[in-house]
Length: 490
Image (cartoon, rainbow, N blue to C red; front, side, top):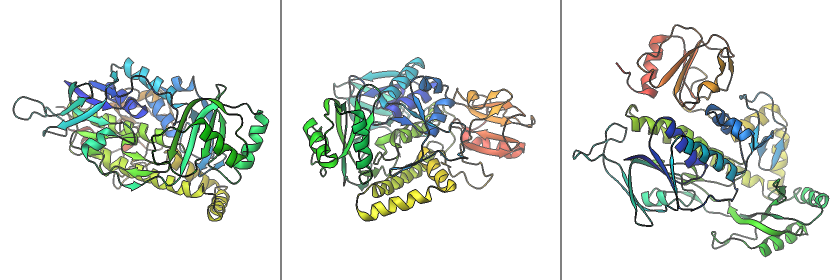
């Protein structure tokens, strides 16, 4: 029997498959497309996603095909220098087109043994009652409880869990009947990758002039001889799935910029709006939602792909624990309680950014005021850590100031911290040498290292790098371990 079916072969689904396979979970990824999409809505990884790739030993692969960028703020069309003091050892983003990200994650998922089945469109699903927190999940007849899936070609599959990572128009979410409240698109933007025949200096001059009053406009080199064209649409299309035409781009470019730059030979044409919605629940029994299936928002700040990858990073080890049978009560539910607020916060900041990107006098004045405020280092750092997700802190209750935060990479006597986390296990980083994780050694590594930058005696890290405990008292540690890593093996 398959342990987990992942629906959707984008960055979220692929990252989740990689995380599950680290724990030996039998996973199959289904996608309705027969070939990978070459559309590149996501154009890079922010600092937290860079950290995630480093934590799993994938960063060198991304560095080999990406350019680093350092833009602070990056909020509502306002670009500032990277601020000092951002809490990361990776103070940069990576310019990586989405098809490249998907290729690298597909390679890794296959290396780890994940099954990937393209041309497999899900049209139906059902789930049986059973133990939702792990274990055998038997329904009393010898049949394991789980999720049944029907594909468009009539094939039926069965798994213990299913995760919908199938985008903003998620079939899985629709079949579950999960509410998706929010606001429909009120403004729309045309997006295309195509050639231009205009002189590059002319293009740069026109773009600089237009962006003084229209921040939703841009002509960006793709590095392959083409340009990404971003231009406001004339209203919102009745059929949002209809692909815009090259002539529509030319017309809007002439209206907005006074020239169409000689655009020709389009490779990809699409449209996106500012619809903002979030699933009411990220989990229904044995079915979960992640990525755009759980939340959609404008692409301002480049947060969408990153938010999905980070959903998968939070969910993967928890779902693996449920499959392997050691998940404590409530662990799988903590995926919703931790990630739903993070998603809601991204929706709020993108709503604010869309307002800032307006062309009316009030939006222009507000953008100017915020630009002045972001000249203050503390404001710039706050906004940068929000956009890059470095500032995310989960609510683990009262305790040490590190509790709930992800721990930055740091040098240790035994090497780099993130280099010790490639296997996706928990980690007790112990400067004292007096602590023990006996009983949890199958789930938690114990590293005694008195060096490094850590300013507390010891920290217990979850597999996603967030601090679950800090201190030096063994009894206190023993009280915290079961919350995240289940009962000890005796």
